[in-house]
Image (cartoon, rainbow, N blue to C red):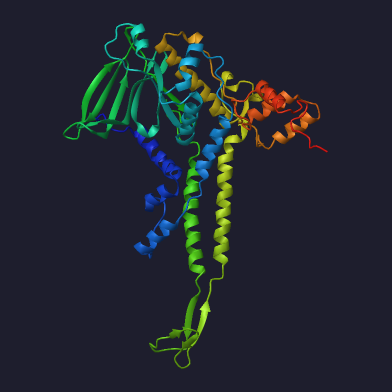
Length: 464
């Protein structure tokens, strides 16, 4: 019989993959701390020599840069929420997690996590208010739904059932760190396990014996009735055929990144060795000691000295190997942008011709569905019908292989040729992030007029 803190077999496998991802994302420091997990100690290498080699090793951050770039493409433009219910749009989305993060910031963190680990979860929770009897009293005390991001490393396991023909999560266990009082003035951090089930949530904290002791049980009710669903939204990038689970889509890139870490260390090591020539002595059969002082060298009779230097062949071979690895990593990351015919529903295909889209676009489409479901749960807490919630849309810069900032030069040329208007050029520069979102076209015209500039030009011509 498994205890509440037991990790399921499926989550154990995902945690092992996530550990490699986390170490790579932790940079050089995390990889050095991992030691022999990724950097092998050679059979004849002393402990001190190995430690020195480990502490000089540096990481090429291919995985981290790829994740940031791909997430940046998806969220190059803000999430479109114009079709979302006005109450949710105005009162919830500006601070969607009660941590000060708006929907764009929160969504990018959720997407980044799922792109890194294959799946990431969000709990749609509701502010806990004590001793209230009416909805009006709840609102007066600031009660409202909010989103909680739960990374897969924190998930211990979950159960599912088919209810009304639909597979649903019926139990979800995860751990979190919370801060509690420690005496009159101090605080301490402890690990709490939360078990969310239909209509209730149970919390377990370590007791005096060190066991996961039961702490409290809270009823989850909606309009006076027990909540008949578990408000957890899994967002899966690379599916594995298991409900609410996935695997890291960039795992092969992660393995290549680890290989590069090892190869780079070998290359640095051989460079350090090759840079110091060896002094070889020949023609001496006894134990005579060579004496070197200033520019004079005392040799035994018939003795000779020569320097033995590395040919450099293995250095060049190692450098070539590193370059090939870096090229392979670029290809592995760029595969997310390769367009192909993917298995999608008609709703996922959207306007893509022939349903030929990239993996990244597919993930963005799936993320729209995950965000919609999260907002549907928000609506349930607020008593808003599903049909009135609306839908989000993600446009981004997913399928354009050209740097949008570089293409601004073409936009300016089009405006100069009279093909597009000045306002369109302004809007395009704003869309590319070259101009702050707080700046608008009308205000800029007023500023240009106040500075005595001609609105027919973007820049003032030099005086003759």
